[in-house]
Amino acid sequence: MNSGPPWRRGEGRRPPWWPEGEAGPWTAGPNWRRQGRRIARRIGCFIGAVLLVLVTAIFGVVWLLLSAFGAVNSAPFDTAVAVTALVLGGIAVVVAILVLRRLAPPVEALIEGARRIEAGDLSARVPVRGPSGLRSLARAMNAMSGQLEAEETRRRSVLADIAHEFRTPLSIIRGQAEAITDGVYPADAEHMAPIVSATESLEMLVNDLATLTLAESGTLRLHREPVDVAVFVNETLNAFAAEARAAVVQLTEHVDADIPALDADPGRLRGVLGNLVTNALAHSRSGGTIRVEGVASGGWILLTVRDNGTGIPADLLPRVFDRFVKDPASSGSGFGLAIARDVVEAHGGSVSATSTAAEGTAITLRLPAVAAG
Image 1 (spheres, one colour):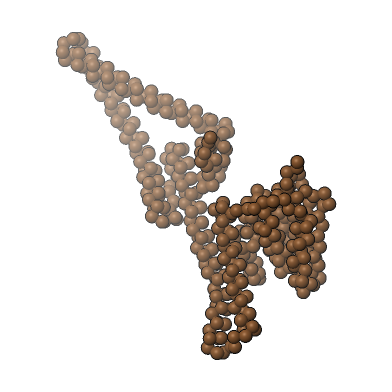
Image 2 (cartoon, rainbow, N blue to C red; image 1 turned 45 degrees about the vertical axis):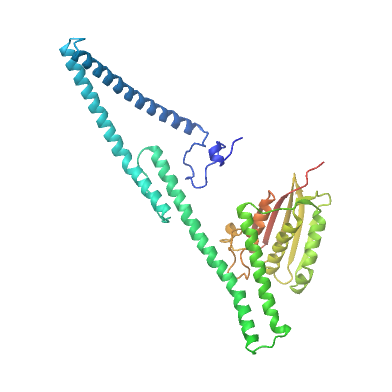
């Protein structure tokens, strides 16, 4: 059985750090075949030239040895053989020097670039020069270091955002606790409530981080079972009925009557749908409507949460499922939609978003249905 990354198994997929459009060993098109034949011809010519030089040199050495022992006697031919051997040897030396002069600088640059990256300098780039193979390798190395640099920048940004998200509830807890300890506030329910609320916020952040970590490492465990879509949607909306009434927002649902059951983890999926409804409530206008729809499409179930609120800014929409991407006016952590995407993808599904300021936002979850029979 084949194992390893798809680009090593020849499944037609390039590694994520290889430059897009650059041919590689996973390419199965005619361009790669032409390049392979060209490389084969070059290798064949090189091997033929080496063999010619070796055969000529061996013949010359043998002839000179026979001449030295008197086995043959042809002084002019001896001289011709010696001159030919010297000329071929000189040609071989010149060719070797030219090849080394062409290969040495780009190879040295690649080695130096690799050492800089190993030492932690992810801004290292190498010049793209030399034979086509070395140029492709240099471009791939530059793309790899560029992606590593971007990932490192993103990692630092995420750490800074996490520290910021933790700082607010911790400040509330410390401020209230110190005030109660110093006797400024009495230790009653009113002044303990902010501590409890901030603690719940911290708990939610920790749980979200744990879910993101598990999803990113591919170890998010799902307890899948058949889920009745109509019951699931109804129960989720009932949980937000009081909050919707307070915001003067109407919650509605429409689920196809003959829709098959979902093949999903109800606990994980309830958190995803609840998060989408929470976001919709946060961005809905007074008197607005939030509609949850469930339809069957082939072997899939499409769950859509649709609102007629303020919409997602156009510059954020392409990145709305990334971590910590959120509207500056939002009070959330920026984890919600990223978790929704990771949980849905762990089910083998996908998630998409459409949004305009005039019509509001629609988030669609594409999830597997229970197989018929």
